[in-house]
Length: 447
Image (tube, rainbow, N blue to C red; front, side, top):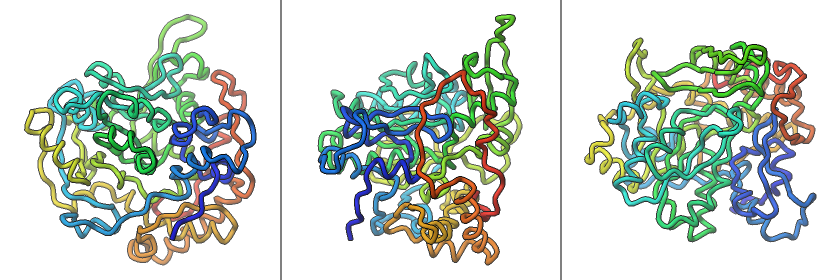
């Protein structure tokens, strides 16, 4: 059954936009992405309200993952049967790191994403790697670049816990002289998968997709609130903000210039504190309805192996999921060429490493039911066994909380009202950013 196509304007107004930017790639003359303070990056129609008969805008809506997520096919031969229902297709589970010590140190975990991309560019015959980094002229914001060498890849290493739209620049891959790597969050990878199905040249040029484990994207105000905690009261004075890296799991570090003295100041907070006590409170609503936190449509997915405590000073390590035959071939070539050191792991290591993401996914069926009963638009996850996870992973109390907590959130977040996209003005946040934070809600263990 084909699901109805929801217009880009309706996806945004009904709180289902992921901010991936795929619509802007499909229709660059009519859609542009803007940074908003409270919601994330959002598409804006250049010429005002759209003509519903506009075929190009319909194509843009067709690739949007906000409401109609790519359907999950039946498991292919060779996938781990115990993982498929709740983690998608996984052929192999590995743990390891980049052999480049600087990449490993500056990466969020073991530097595998950057190391694998570097192999593809230097030895794998690929023309570049499309990824996100801090904007050079506005470090609180992000930009998407096509890196063609180690220096450029290294400059973009490490996590960015703030809004980004890498799919907006898929045209750089489509117009490249050869295949390229695409690095993104699970929703970005899903959007690229939908786009390649209707753009043959993009399909030919997507040489490898790497999905990064994701628990949600905080808004720009989340970063500003965290910067204020660190002592940077004026966001326009921030010259650098690093969310992870420089150790494992690394610290969140802000550097800003004192406007009175002109001197630079630096302050840090642990990753666990910065994410758990500040950033995660500012995630957009669509992230609370996400069932894919590990990049199930990617060739390779990478996250943290949290199945054991990280020792002080321990070098970073990455958890690597090989999802496709293409991914398996490239990962093994990268190991053979000395770019990565990987050790095979049993399937349960993934589950043990990401208990929180497993339970978050388990809440989605209950959250969806409660949302629909109230008239709130919800994502469609065809082929994902969400009811099974809800019934299997949650206690009766947690199942009830997934329903009642969602009702509370719908009214607290005003989800029955249309979302309004107001462009962000860096340096002009007179309203306390804490006003936009989500207060704790009993919505089961998933967050």
